Image (cartoon, rainbow, N blue to C red; front, side, top):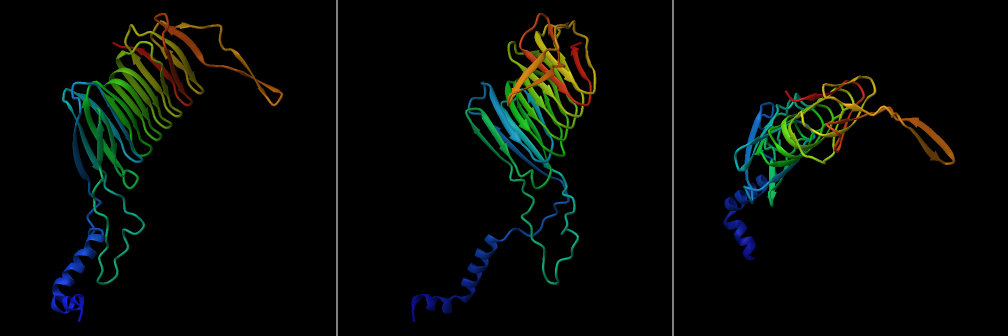
Length: 287
């Protein structure tokens, strides 16, 4: 009799336990209650805490709030919203069986290299809200698609924000910004702006409301298809516009009128584009 056969006869209980262990390691955990809120936190230490950093994060479902603070770490608080009942959730399990699920882990991960932090999580499976604290001197590239808004507060750097079905709010930020959403308002208040850097603020359905310091210099390019443009700055409007554009397409000339509003604030500077389709545009002086 071979040694393997001898072992099978000699240790049936031990081998059965081993087989059960191997099987359990390949199966998902027994169902946990994902109808409840789930929270996780990560604290990311920076390679060079006293130098500027950057953050990149994108969600499919959920909100993002980024706040600048006096600390040296990036602190990430993630909250998974209670999952709505799916098409199988209310179906009873067959007799003697239990429904299995992959558990409630958010698979929240963060990678850091040379003060550049990238965050990922499984927001495609359920809506996850991120509340992130970063050192104040931080650049951002953040986005979400559904079921959430984006808010940035007290951060100084290059800010790039994209949303689809939700609003964007930049509150008391410094530096420069590129902000775009489709369905939602866009509000931005700047403590200071970086000279010579172009900025853009646009939405399709919503208002664009931007507040600059009184001494900000800008070359304005503004357009609302179904709204008005307002400002309490002394805007030097370029009255020589609109201009006519002629485009050659297969021997035919397409003639169109550029109905943007152009102007200068405090003598002009880098271009600031503000655009919406359904809504008003407001350019305000800081009070």
